Length: 438
Image (cartoon, rainbow, N blue to C red; front, side, top):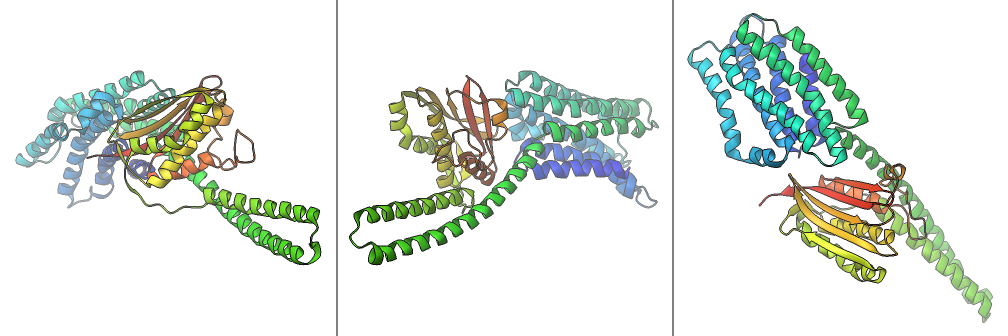
């Protein structure tokens, strides 16, 4: 029983740590913690003298778990179901059956769950939850998100059906039925699948969090390295500048050729200093001053300096920026991140094409997207585009830090950056940020 309690509690903590802003993660953690109350009761409250506490824990376990499961499924499924789940009244109405069951037990002063009464509403709750999770897989159009939904359904649906059959139905028909040995098989199954998929595909954002932490570590290491490089280059460039001035005043005299050579050395030293500073500015941890921002306004401001370039390249720009979609971010850095994404799109379409810049609301996120009709990228390159110093466009001004900077900005916002691309099909970059209501 201790293993049962530990697994459920650990899963809830991991989901909350991975993305506390996600409503689906919060509801998943809620029903996992409610389910763990059964383990709490058996592990610590089954001793003599704790009978009342034991019964209350079991009662809350059997009433709040199906409620949490249904709310998680409503929020996670998205679309109309999610819109309904957001409504305060619906959450209140769905809480009425659990409250009625608890009140019935309290009024009869027996506290033990009334399983025949429980079955009248827990069966619909569990079955609707399973249907929502399965149907959301079929409705999802995005390939990666559909895979994520399938994984979630594989983890949860069999166990929910097992709980319904071996706890709610079995206990209603046979009150003395020992369900734990059967339900534990489903619990072990769910955790085995979840553990495998966390490393392969990701579950409710957990893999994304691990990957983000890894990239954040790479950026920190890069920042330390470029800081040392910048400091060294500036020191050496300073020595060169002093030497150039000394030579001008002593050895060179009026020698025009020597003056030209000194000018070349001076410009090279200045360029090295500037280049080191630019690289360092993109890798160091920057000051972050979050404020309420209109995402559509920031997208238009980021587009403005590039409009002449797009027109000169023959790129048709299509804007679909919804108004009054607010996010919490540093407007300076978010605008700069959007500028980097737009500049990448411009470089991909030097011979013309079409650009789509959009801002829309998707579930509870504001999505800022940039789509180009450039040559696209193969899967092998997509896996590395966020890495510092990796660039698909080698050149004197391409340090491979633009998208790494975008990643840093999104991490500061509590959002995430996504990129989809195929050779010959162009590229789309999406920046997802939690929406601010009101």
